[in-house]
Image (cartoon, rainbow, N blue to C red; front, side, top):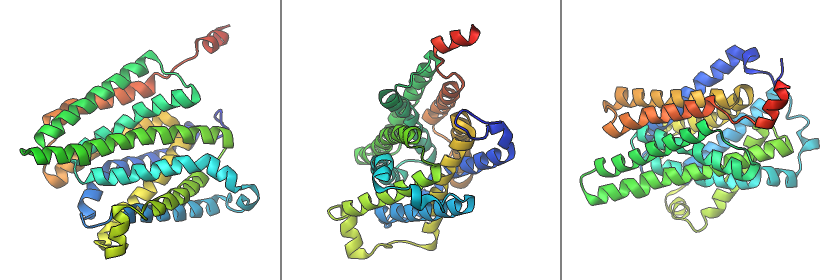
Length: 328
């Protein structure tokens, strides 16, 4: 049984799809907590992002060699085609990753995970702008619920994280704003990737390799005049690193591979359920390892986010003209 894009349907790959989904749920849900516990403040953000991209490229190349697509790459691949398909999304994702690394350190794990879900709204927005992909009434309602949850969390974090004004400002400017900007960038890059895959027919592994390489080059160029670049010159690339620093770096890289696998094999609906499940994993891990129950704002926002994502995935837009043709 094949899907419209020529791939296997989720039902025909049940065990493997379930395996990928469980792995991504655990990775996505635990990533904020792992990063917070394993990456000390002395670690230079650019060094962890670049190392993550290198690990991602190595993993993707190994998987391409395993499925046989690496052999024919030299005949099909072109520099112009690669830059067209992956150049801009790669640069955007590189900036997004840096913003997420900054945000991890200033927000609690559950709040970060829920705020990070606003990228679904921005993905829908840019998908409409770039691909003219419309939303159903139910989906628009779901997006409104998502924004309500984001506002609740922003107000809650800004007022409850610390009693002093300086603490509150730090949470807003180094926690909430970076993750929301990262969500906007994620939506834009995701829409561009969707456009590239439809036009250029790139595989998820090839896109991963190209985007990681281009993104890394952009990040290296940015270090020439950035504070991180100065810090690397002064203290060294691996300043503040320990053996534990590799754990979130490798986890994040594998998560990038898993996102592509789940999306290509199971589609957006399964990925939506993975995201919802990951929120529950984050809440459980935060309570288990930090002994910190969710705040009242999180308790109100969490069901809003879960409902909005489920609603958005369950009621996709249906073209009325195509629907009438099917009935006829």
